[in-house]
Length: 147
Image (tube, rainbow, N blue to C red):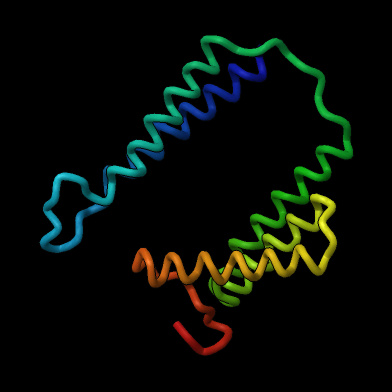
């Protein structure tokens, strides 16, 4: 119970800070539409705040902490995600997302070749979807001399 309440309080603080920062987004020049760039982050902040308040009001009974092996696996997943953020700009989205998905799939007991195939195919698909379908630029990698 106490773990859920502490987590709920920390999440609520995060939601408030995130929501306040979301209000600082300025619409693009001439983009005075009803929904600006702050709408989606504000919605996420509100949903996070509601979830955290619920967690504080109706916590689950305390459970035993998971075994050390599970905590090591979670730390490894966190390291892969942080590594993705670090290598995203220099290596580009396709290579860094491909590596991250490959490593995560491999940690979920997939064979290395199918994991790599899924990782790199999905990263190429996501790159094409964001770049050409949604017209949102993803980094191609500064290491290759492209911006």
